[in-house]
Image (cartoon, rainbow, N blue to C red; front, side, top):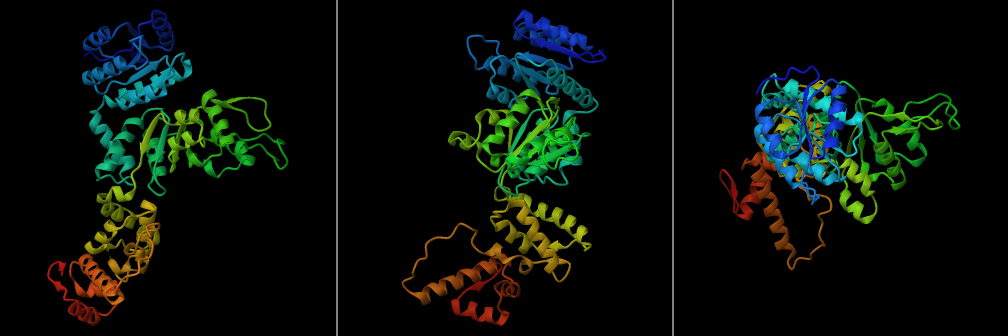
Length: 472
């Protein structure tokens, strides 16, 4: 394929309606783009095989007797097979957000709905063409790896398959302008994901502003988000810039969106739909250009079904969902997370970075971590403080790691023989301690809080044999 010589870029327009093709051609020509328009999937593929383009702007609904968009989705896959680096922006006249989401899952970079907003469409194309031109300088794989190493690796550890899948999604959607809904339990690192998405986006040079959406009362909501003018209310002695204005040109991260009251959800929805707002006390609308990232630990689909969350806002936010797995689903990452967190915490505390014994790491991998990465970091910080030397062992870890997780208690069972039950429990605790310490009795005794001699007598009494691993 010959390289493009157009200063703004070369765009291939694909739509079966002549008036749509002409309107897009005139709009893009006025912005300095070179365009070519085709009316069928066959013509689109033939054109791509003979000429090079910086972006494709294509309709998803070639089959007018259905709203499924399957023909357009199939065409998208064929374009990807021809050139996986070519940005494709899809259009749909059906107002179908789920269809647009599916297109992005299959490789589209962004989407617009008909009738389109000229400014939004031009912004999307400009962003994608600039990214395309940057990626031409190296292979896409190397570019993505470089971005991930530079921006994501220090905080997003991804050796496990579960987190590698998350990083792949981040690499795909990060350079786009699509809204992203980040879901996951408390402490899984949703804000870290948001910061990485912002860092990979064309908005990275602009601010990312974070708002705890669930922590705003109705009384301060509008002032906090939209700002106010002087004298707007008692105490407004000077004008204040709201979060939307602070994030203009950048990213607005709405954390805990699932806890936002219904009355406030409508106000956020209005701004997302109209891309403008009025500061409190002002009659003048102000335009806003922000990318929205939202996060929640709630099941928003269930909240929509139960009437606790607006469906229209949900679909606006959920253009591209990313589910961050809990720590118990990515145990392979724990040793690397421990090493990374220990380095940062020790540096912050002015202490040398400690090493963690294999027994300590095994104990940490065995734990369910209901508080996820945040709880792991707290555990590491405590271990660094209490460790006597430059090594963290099992005895330096919180005892919570060796007890039942919260919420897992069962009804108390009265044993038929208290002595037999106590012996059974004693045997289980000793075997578990020996397993975690690889059969080293002095460490097992320390873990159990007894002397080594006391442990030896108990092992002998219970008939436990110790080799490389503890057995009965």
